Length: 195
Image 1: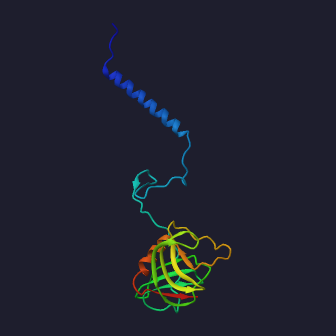
Image 2 (image 1 turned 135 degrees about the horizontal axis):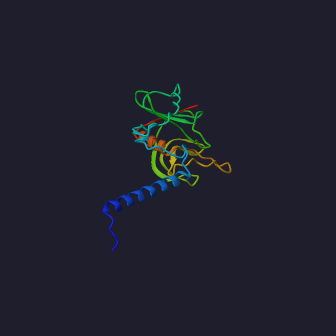
Image 3 (image 1 turned 180 degrees about the vertical axis):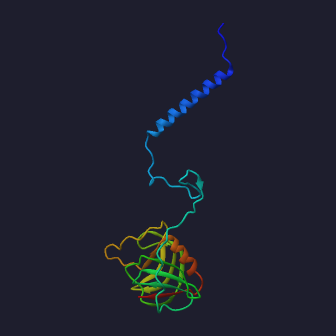
């Protein structure tokens, strides 16, 4: 009858075999492709430091350029200011401070400069270009067309007017449309259109 090996010999042998297997796999993995720095995005809560330890790293939002100042001669008090030349809207509170400003895509027909009141609101409809739009705020009329602010439901920019078709919708990004809707649906909201 063959002699039995003590259990510590078996444990030592299995441990040594497992260590060799792990080292072999590590060497094989080291020869494979490695991610580049551009392809690796650290998590917002932690990233590895130079010494290999994890430390908290705050997520910073890139700075956006400051919006231009509210145009002169655009009235006073709570109002929406729309600049035809800058293709930009400002939401101005009662203290004459702009709380938000953003660029827009105007239609081929623009309102005349002046002061208007938002006369009608519509939660959603189909635009003259066939696009589903929302947050529609009507405030003027020109050339037989109703001029209104809106945004596409899918957030897209409007296509260029085809075949000389006249459009009077002033479109904006979805988040700007939501902000303007919240601001503009208050009763008697004024819109000041400037050059």
